[in-house]
Length: 276
Image (tube, rainbow, N blue to C red; front, top):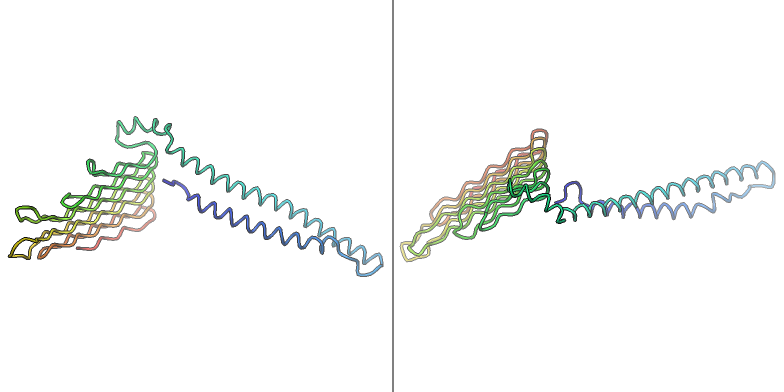
């Protein structure tokens, strides 16, 4: 995950600044000859003194411009260097050394110290919690048809975003003619304790449809949407509630999930999901 800034933005800003520096340098070079070699208006001493004075001001401007250009070039270099350092830090996040640091925390608490939690799987539908210090919670597993409730999104640790809840499985028609209901969407994970957005709730599954011999006209209920996750203590947006699943023929759609509450200082409550 990117914890502070997006390196691409900084790289683009450095490129823009370099272009500005080039344009200023070209303008300064174009002004060099007319401003440093001012000709005297006449042959008298006063005219020559005035020309010399203006030329000296032009030379001083060129000297200052050279210093500013050097500073500008150094600043652009620092920005590009910062992007490289940040990319290196991101790469270090996947380094075996970090895996060794995280190993005891995963073994004891089933979550890393630093880094994102793993997404849910068919065997373990709920997303793993994010790193205790920082990291996003893993996303819940979206169930296949007949799979039931979607996996819950993992909670973030100190700083990070909660994982999104998985979608509930669609209802199916069984061999004996029964029709299943859509599964409930998984709840979104809680945002980081200090700061972070709550995860979005998963959508409810669609109710099953009866396709057997007459009499037709009945189906399963749509699953309820998962609730959005709560935002962090000091700031962040609540997660959006999942949408309720559409109903099978003649039955009810699922209720939309409630949006998660915002952070205490700033942020917005998550929107409620739509009813099926």
